Picture (tube, helix red, strand yellow):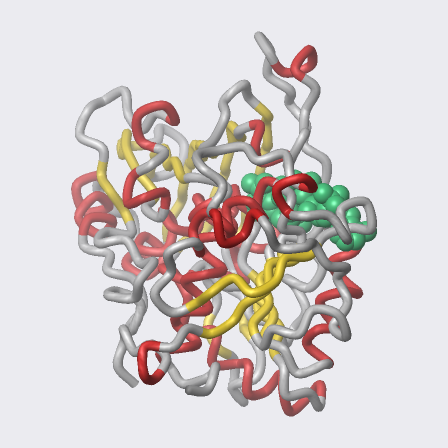
Length: 361
Ligand code: NAP
């Protein structure tokens, strides 16, 4: 089916945002405020927020609060209370696992940012500009789980940035080993997140559970649909990750050292990165950036301050592509953790499902 196909007759699909008061939930609300295909009908969060007007429940962080959402009453995260057919989840992982299953069982299409179901064999783990085609395993998921709903996940925010930079290299040269060191922004820890006295003037060389997530998710994202079409055959390269929290507001940086099956020159690697257009059917969708990867020209880029908003936060900027004295290549990638690394990816996944007829008309 053709990309760019929205709902019939200019109507918009009603959508709900779960975890709407948090850092990712607020990003959903900003990005969906003027969306051509989706209209925010419901917002939901914890019992602390339920029953309050959104403007009172959320500590709004960035730009003007969209007027259409300000007066919505926050609901609890239950499928008998939240009725929209499409559900964007920005829930804390403590509740996301059970809540998202309840919505999918109730026939809703759930697009999740939480870690809980990312590695389930029949759940697509999708960075849309890398592997939107993995969404095709949803038919198998529906058959296996006996539900008419769907559960789609997008990746850990740092894994997303690394996956965007690695995808063209894996396709062209085959990845063998990847060492990744991340420098992750404070907003990656949610709101209110890391105490200011811990992070200002410091670097914290530990983010709970982050390194195993990056190491497990990258081979699934860069894998291929397996025999039978209902699960993903993971790629076989190895990953070693070190994750650090740094005093940056938005934008995760990933410093990558890479060994390939076929050794590329830095010029060949840069050509592969520059030529990446993403999977079929993504370009032209409302949230798709014109260029999924932007190649930084200057030797001191990418920088969070200067490059985090590339492609309205949906592009990953790559720079410093150079030889590695031990492996083959080194490079640096940067992306917006709550946009391409979270809410923006979920929305782009929903647009892909819409344009492929999975959301109905
Ligand atoms: P956050 O700022 O802490 O927000 C968490 C949200 O979950 C809030 O809306 C909160 O509602 C809600 N919540 C917490 N406990 C709940 C419960 N028991 N029942 C219902 N709602 C509950 O976190 P975040 O950074 O936005 O992250 C949201 C999810 O996205 C997490 O799973 C995170 O791992 C993932 N993620 C985050 C990023 C990022 O860059 N921040 C990137 C990728 C993925 P109240 O306000 O009512 O407490």
